[in-house]
Length: 385
Image 1 (tube, rainbow, N blue to C red):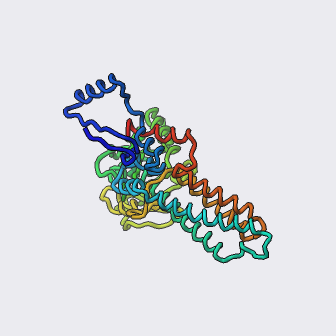
Image 2: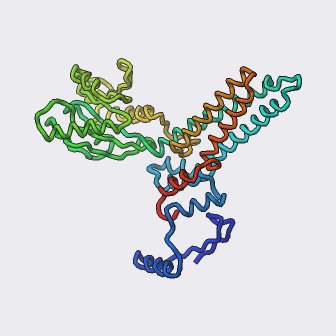
Image 3: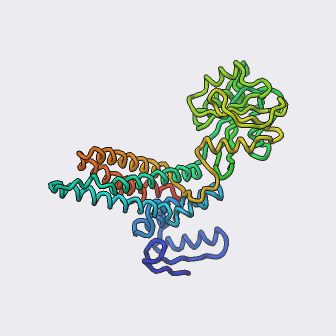
C-alpha cells in the first residue's frame, strides 16, 4: 500500500494505492472486497478529470494522457509527452500574457481618449501585435503537425485492374497483406492496413480495380471501393508506366470524388524509366517500381508532404481538431483587431476582438470550457486514468 498526500498527488487529493499480487482472479477478488466495503469503480478518465478540476493539470495536458496511451508511433509518444509536460500550455500562456498586455494598452487608450495623444499610433503596439500573430501562426503549424501525428492520414489506392495496387500495398506494409495475381479482379474487397511512414500513421486501403464488369462479386468489390474512397483523405491513383495515363484512366479520374490526388506510375523498371517525382498537368506524380521497391522512399516522402507533415519535428506537440479550431479563431480575431487598429477609429471593436482572441486560447487549456465538452473529453478515456 502506497499513500500520496494532497495537494501534491496526481489528482491533488489524498490517494491510497493498493498493489495486489497474482493474476486477474486475485485482483478481481480484491476489487470485489473494496466495493463491498463502500468503494466504487472509477469512471473513464476520472483521475485525470479530478487532476484538471483541482488545478494540477490543464485540459490540454489531460488530453495528452489519453493521447500518450493511444500513440501509434515513437514520434507520437514524444509529442504527447511534450504536451503532457506542458510545452503546448506554456506556449498558450505566453500568447495569453501578450494578449493581456495588448488589451491593457488598447483599453488604456480608450480611457484616455480625451487627451491629445494618439496612443494607438504607437509603433510598439503594431510590433507587439505582429509578434503575437507570428507566435500564433507558429503554434498553428506545430499543432497541425501534432494532429497528423495523432490522427494520421487515410489513403485509398485506386486504379484499373492489374496496375499493381496490391503490390504497392504489400511494398508499403513490408509483408504480403494482399493477394497478388496477374488475373484481373483478384481484389474483391477493400483491404485496410495501418502503417507508420516516417512517423506519420497511415491507414492504407487497397481497393478493387475500377472497371465495367458483369461479375456480381466483382461489382460488389467495386461498389465497396467507391465507398472507401468517400472516407479517404487522399486518392493514390495507380497506372502502368508503360502506357501512362490512358483514356480509360482519364475517365476513372473524372469519376473520383473531389479530393486530393497523387498519381503513381508503377512498373517504371519495365518502362526503362528511373524513379522520380514530377508534376503532370498539375497533379503530383511518383514514378516507381512497387515489386522491387525502387522509388518507395519517394512515395513515402510525397505522402508526408501531401499530409502537410514533416518527419522528426522536435517542436511538435500533439494536438486535436478542437485545438486547431481555437487557434484559427484566435488568429482571425487578431487579424480583425489589426485592421481596426490600423484605421485608428474603431478602438472599441479592436479591444473586443482581442478579448475574443484570449477567450479562444482559453478554450484549449480549459479556462473557458463548457461542462458538456469536459464530459465528452473525459468519457473517451479508458477506465480510471
